[in-house]
Image (cartoon, rainbow, N blue to C red; front, side):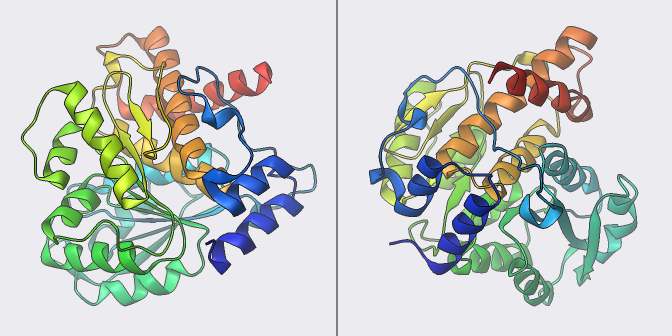
Length: 324
């Protein structure tokens, strides 16, 4: 059963030309809607949201990014800038007040709001401000640079369980989710988790390291808890428990700090622009990997850093748009 927030967002995106009729049907009625290209198991291309000629910034997705802490301001800045570069009309960032000036300095296009801070991270009181601003957003991205604290656990638990909006959880958002012992089935809206293998092992309480076994566990977890899971790595797996694909783009140069934060922003942006959770995750991984391939061709794999992905992301998007 679709909730009121999802229906209103889908209808608004359809009216603005950002969803086709088939996309609208899938978003409203879920995986039992008429099949589209997202049902393919090994999709090797990518399609992006359609931007109407008369669209304004309020039509193009309002993304709220929550995270950051002293020493890890770059992570949240990378995620937020990636959302902007992927086409989001408005991106708002909430960080502990101690790091607001640093995060603000990365881009004048970001709206950076300070929250109560304690020891360089979020304080307990920050959760109310965060929940208030979540109501503004079409989608929330949670976790980059957040750190693992008791306050972080409470923020992650409340957002995961209570939000009607789509929520993308990455990095320390996942670690806090595991530490809080949350039941992953207890949520009100779309949930997308983007762990690397270590974060996934912590999330499911497993020490298994075989990639094939981890992927099987990921498919089972996604099906059991009604969420979409992006298990990062070579040929990243994207699954919602009913369908799955391996991403064909990307290279070893992307094994660098901050690369996953960029992916978080890309996926959140596509969700906010109206793609279904599986399509946003699959296409987000494709764009992210292609940006990495473009950057590696220009700079070499050894020299690639996460901010290079932001530079190459527009070229990645243009290549996709030219192909369709």
